[in-house]
Image 1 (cartoon, rainbow, N blue to C red):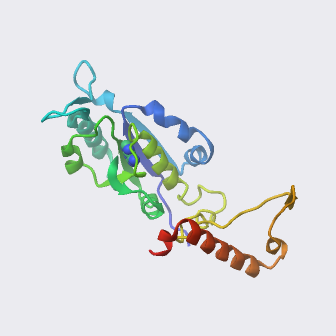
Image 2: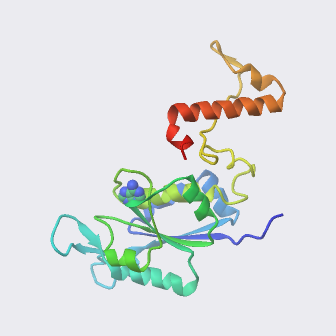
Length: 232
Ligand code: ADE
């Protein structure tokens, strides 16, 4: 049975909205937005500054290289949003956050309203994290110039899991990682190309055999490439 699902709403706070827009203007994410399954709202932090220079960052107390994003514009933006609706999660994109994986994407895809704050420079004043942030996410052990590309990655991973976004309802369930296994090899026409043949079993018409072969291949691939997944 299907239960009614509210449109998911994602508010993204950034100093560089233009860096973030294009991933939402093509393919699956675009269609999800057009179908009303998700709403994306961009907020330029500079619109929430009070000084004439529209500055969002300042020097670090205690000294040290790199600027720090100030709490005031972020407070104004987040508090304004919270006055309008309840948010289930306020996520800060940062390399020292919890490393993103399929399980986290699954959890977030069940939320209704979320805010994603993109960090820049050295990051945000610690008081922002202490006061507003409910989840801190890293997309991997490397440092990006800002949280925007990470936010795009997170949104893509989450939005494709919303029921109705992918044409075939089951296709997200057969992705790599959904069962802690990598996906098996896949083939399409032609049946033979420059002497390279498609495995015979796929033409057997025996779906039990095909499923068994796919499971074996998924297991083999996982063992070879990502044995760490099998130990969980
Ligand atoms: N901002 C900078 N580096 C990042 C990373 N690896 N993940 C998420 N946000 C980031």
